[in-house]
Length: 402
Image (cartoon, rainbow, N blue to C red; front, side):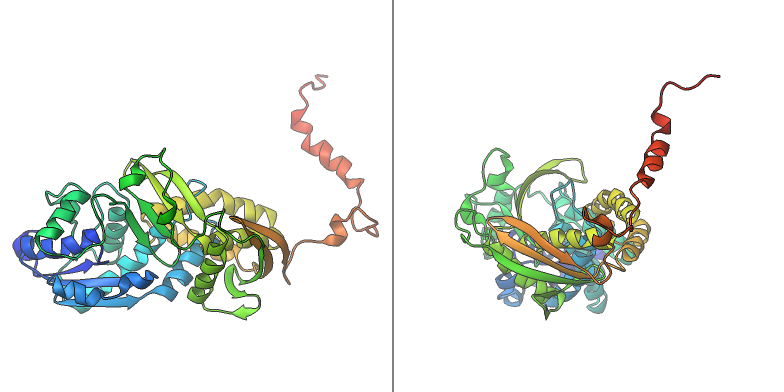
């Protein structure tokens, strides 16, 4: 923890939500420093409205907003999809993927605005504190970090609400409905408050981009996704930027109730936590990408990548995006994706993503070899006899002892 009198200016990762609104004022009160509010636009949409005015009204000397949407989707979301990164078999890592790109640019803003420290609103119980601070250490270890949740005497959301009321800070959270919501272009996450009881079902009015199964259309929507080297590039033949493509998929899939997840996950700090997520577009991308890999990846390459995928997801989840081991894994993933080019046809219906076709100019699938009809001698079935015998040698328990 830096000495308070040594901190002159702090770059705060600012969302305008309850925690960071309180933190902005708290930094001024406790450290007597100037605060530069920094907001990364990773697809929060309306949550950015009026943010500079709110930050300055709360005491910030400046509010810097950086549009990171294209970089976030291209360099982080798509990379996770190419590596089949799914944490604990369910979570598509929407929050975990946003943190390193946010923290990376926070360091850049801190340097350009003359800050000698950075601050974040992550609690001492969560994963985000690790994700932010490991990125800070990897990219600029000389810049000091302030983590208010590990310093102040505010112990709960209710305490923060009371602090905000004391200083007339406008907030949207309430004591009655204090669950936390984090939104970006990839997903919306909900946790805390009423969701801390893992038996309680989420309120239906909580969800934003996804329809309930009951309200989803009674007719499927069919789309064709185009990929180049594992990256989605088009919908129904129309080339789109990464952010445009994910935005459109979110709308299409969300209308059909695709991408809702309710899970209890293992946080890096050792706690179990209940999280509810909406990830419509990326759910479609994961299914489509996997389908295309089925005809373009060599069997052993696919199986080896799949063995590494849980570790890749774990590194993302735990905040090690900027680490030597992550560099190695991303380079390996690049090698696996060279031939993952083609199209996948899918149907979206009542929460389901159904693959109905896949094709690629680099396909390894051979209809001539696999057919049950006459193959013209392309495959000699008698070869299987020796193959099976060799595979079974180690399984024979009674051996000739002579």
